[in-house]
Amino acid sequence: MGDRLGGKRVLVTSAAKYMGPAVVELFRNEGATVLASEEKLDQSAVDRVVSEAGEVDVLIANFAVQSPLTAVQELTDEGWHATFDALVHPLMRIVRGVVPQMLARKRGKIVAITSSAPLTGFPNGSAYASARAAQNTFIRSVGLELAPNNIQANAIAQGYIKSRTYFPDWYIEKEEFKRLVERNVPAMRMGEAWETAELALFLASENSNFMVGQILPFAGGATTSTG
Figure 1 (cartoon, rainbow, N blue to C red):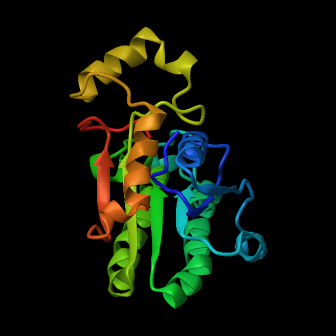
Figure 2: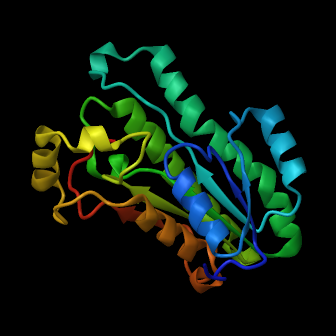
């Protein structure tokens, strides 16, 4: 137990998926009041979540979707739109929803947990990588826009991190996957969810006040992506 986020109110989206469980656990252990949302964030849900949350010092925008591998010639409009509906549009809505109160207070933190897929390329995953790229570009632009108001928005572009959503234990224990990690990840291992949570905590703390609009690669130096 610590007190690195003592007194902070933190809203975590998709709290049961992706990096949500690790972030919620660490942030609560560090003294934050964590508001864990699991709602699908259409506009009415965003309005309700923001209203019920009250003051939000930190937004952890954590979104994930299982996007099947698809050759570009086989992409459908429905699959493309579904990926953007799950990753891009809710990110914009929740950021738009919390920013007014942060502007009023002249302080706030926004941390998006995205993916390294658009940084490395993702063959047969073009819809997923494109949606993650849109997230990264959105945060980059929003971070620069909000910086003069003492609001810091940054993204963790992670890859090869253990999670029930993308890399459950049974999958990473496959010999074929172990060989893939050894081939593609210079760190020669998978990352742990707590490592992402620690980076998110740094970005949520006052220690990162000079960091704005950054897309932080966090993938053990990986040069290719599996999502």
